[in-house]
Length: 132
Image 1: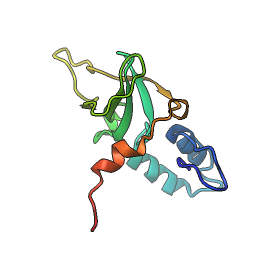
Image 2: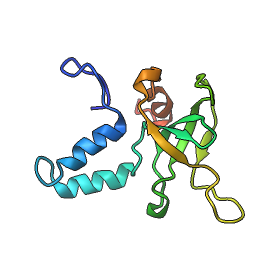
Image 3: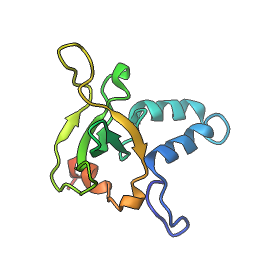
Image 4: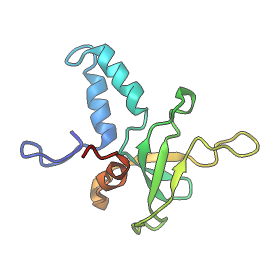
């Protein structure tokens, strides 16, 4: 769903694909499986691109390990504040908090990465172990 195909040239954003699945939970999709799937991938799906308070763009690499922090995934910074791509931006765990207990960084909005022509697969597939 999040990749272009012969039968669907325009890929869906991860957030749109998740919304598509959730909307069909209980009718076209088994509700228990939908619930388990959402729990596994997190509220902000892997591969989503978000804008941070600092106006940098980041791709979600993995969901938070804690449900309490589900809106604070692990991300990789992929573009600076003016939208210039970064080849080796840092990974950030958005569950990190400052000395007052507030989150140090957060995603302020999800964006559609397609107009930016970012290949988000290259960021999170790099961390998948090889089975060769």
